[in-house]
Image (cartoon, rainbow, N blue to C red; front, side):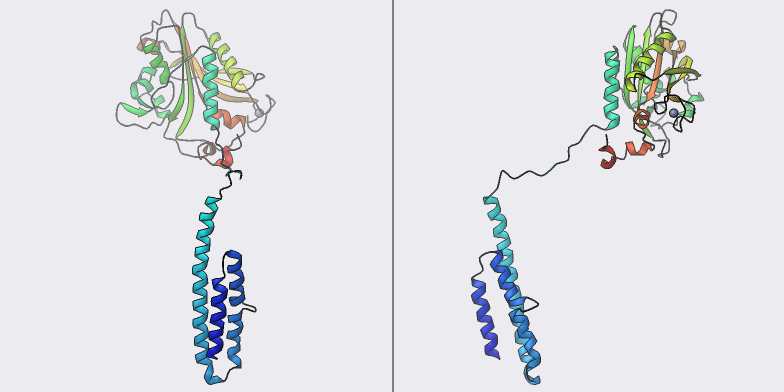
Length: 338
Ligand SMILES: [Zn+2]
């Protein structure tokens, strides 16, 4: 009995010494340890044929043998694996295809922001890069919204203190441009604005705007309408119609809400335009004389117009995005579609 175990050990040692690679390693492992027909496995089964008193000794010896065989094979496996890796480096195949890296693309809002800026630059506008942390004066006061003005309530504001806030619109460009430039002025600014709105399908505490101001002698609402029509046709498409409705904004007089014909039904009526055929797209108006005066523009000589539009609204309309959060969630499955 002990001789047969010694014989097994000897056979294993010989085979083990002959292992040179993973293939020979596997064949040795299967030869001795395979569940069906492995030499050691089969030897264990012989236990039942032995006389009862010999079984414990033989069983223990076979278990020791199996453990040592398993351990040796494991160690050899680790060695072979290591050799395979370092060997692989020596035989690096430079003609193999590389790993596919996902290429990024511009975010739909950023792309639109750039398009809008380009349209405005082509129209002769000067772009202002303005701070998101703004003085109350530029965001409200100089735009005819003194402290306690009711219109401030409509723009729930993030305040730092009494004088500093996160801008609630890009309309501050009106004041910065009038302070920094002499007429004729054509200035525009785009960027993020902040309001204490909930984050749901139609609201976001942060969104994008574009604001425009034009000041010169003899500027009329006709100039504003013409400029808006050219602009909106370039942003959407050349077939859209535009209309103005009376609207109120403290910094303009008269003010107008600007609608475009529905881009989905061309004015026939559909759920997106609530069957009206029109979609409200921006707010505009003639600069309030008080605003001109506050920024040092002679309102007896100059007039001007200003308008502002939400940039996020455009991809939502153009691509039928129903939830504004999708634009800010950075989910690649969504963004890859643009
Ligand atoms: Zn419609």
